[in-house]
Image (cartoon, rainbow, N blue to C red):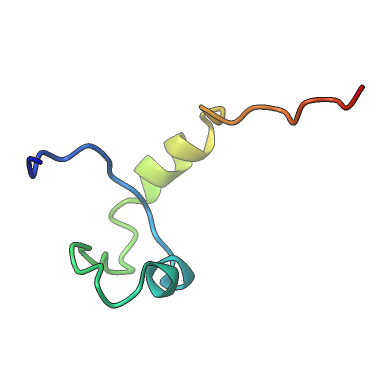
Length: 57
């Protein structure tokens, strides 16, 4: 297994809690709005990989 980065995510405190103490490779972001423009653009993108639940027949 390699240490190649395959994903980047925005995690909440709740997410970090669910991942547990073993998850140590996160880098906290300060609340100075340095990413405000990026977040605004990301919020405008449609979800990817999410599918509608199948209808029951």
